[in-house]
Length: 126
Image (cartoon, rainbow, N blue to C red):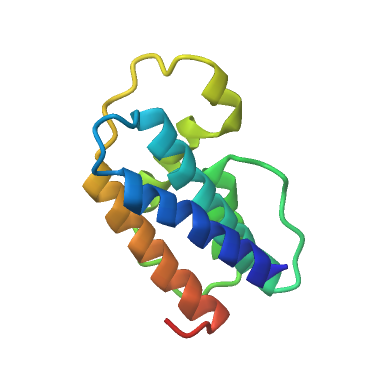
């Protein structure tokens, strides 16, 4: 399960990396795929430990689950990751009120950091 989730997360991250520079693609679409990538990577870490994960899009809850058995703090910007929750599936059908523009370069950098951490946690070769 962890391997499948990590592979699917990479697919979402690839979409973000390819579309983040395209100004015709809205922040909600880029943010959605970024949120999905982080969500799936966090669930992959939890699943790799043989634990059950919640079927939630709340990245704050998933970060907490992923950190439970980790010896060190994850080396990525947790606040930036959690902020992606606003792009989760339930909100895709409503306008994002009062949302700041998505910092696309920072989002791509976040995905790079999360991916490296997950690869190390899962002992996947880079």
